[in-house]
Length: 418
Image (cartoon, rainbow, N blue to C red):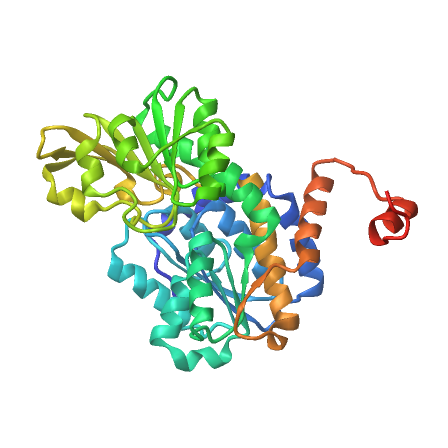
C-alpha cells in the first residue's frame, strides 16, 4: 500500500483519538452498521481530498465498511493531524497522503497520488481534487461516476465550472444540505474558530472589539460565539441582505476600512480573496490579531502585508508578528490558514457527524443514480437530508410530533380554506 505520512509511530495515539471522536458520531455509526451488511460501495474506488482529522477518519472507515477502496489526501496543508494520518494507514489500512505543514508542491503531489487510483467518486473540500483532475488528467474523467463537495467555496467554484460547461461529471453539493450548513457551518465553525484563536493567543475576548468579515452561516456562528464570550462584535459585508440581517441581529455593521481602525480581533469568513488588504493592516491598532476561518489563506493579503512590514517573526506557535512600516505590530494566526483547523482541532465530532453522514449517503446515491445525472451541481436529495436529521434526533433520544391525517390533508389542499 502506497502512502505518505509523517510518522507511523504516531498511529496508536491517532487511533485512540479517532475512537474518541467516534463516540460522538452516532449517525455515522448507524450508517456503518448498514453499510457492513449491504456493501453498497462494493467495487467503487473513492478518492477523497478532505481535512485529515479524527472526524474524517471515521468517515473513511464507514466508506471502507461499505465496500469502497478509499484513498485520502489533505484539503489544507495545515489541517492534517499527523497521528490520525498514521493511524488510518497502520490500523485501518487506508492510503493517506498528508503531512501537516506540507509545501504547495507536496500538497499537489498528494492530490495526484489520490488521482492515481483512478477514482469512480471524488469527495472534495474546496474542489482542488476536481479542478486538478479536470485540468491535468482529463483522460481519467471517463471513469468517474460523480463527486461530492463539502464546503461553500468549493460549491461556488463548481457552479462556476458548470455554468461555463467545464464540469465533466455530476457533483452533489453536500455543503448545501440543511443538516450540514445550518449546523456544521454555524455551530462547528463558530465554536472551533474561537477555540483556535484562544489556543493560539490565550487573549481575553471579553470587552474586546471582534471584527467578523462575512455574515454567511460561518460568520453568523463566529459572531454569535464571540458575543457569547463578551466581545463587542462588528460585521463587515458586501451583501446588503446579509448586512441588514447582521444589523437586526444586533451587531454593528461597517466597511472594513472603518472596522480596521477599531478592531482588536479580526476573522475573515467570506470565501473570497484579499478581504483584509495592506491598506487595512496599516490602519489597525498596535497588537491587532488577524485570523481566517473561511477559505485557504487567500482571504488575507499576506503579500501586501509583507510589503508594508519591516520584520516578520514567529512569537508563539501559530502566531506571526509583523512589524509595520509605521512601527505598529500586527499578529497573524496560523499563517492565515483556517485557524479552527490549524490552531485547534476543527469542528466538534458531534456536528461533523451530520456533515459526514451526508457524504456517505451521497456517495451511495451516486453509485445508484450517478449515471442518470447531467454534468451539473446538485442539491443533496431531500430524503437524505431528512433521514440524517431523523437519525440524529433518534440518537439524542428526542421525539417529535407527526402530522395527523387531517393536518396532512389541510396542508395539501385548498378546499378547506382558513
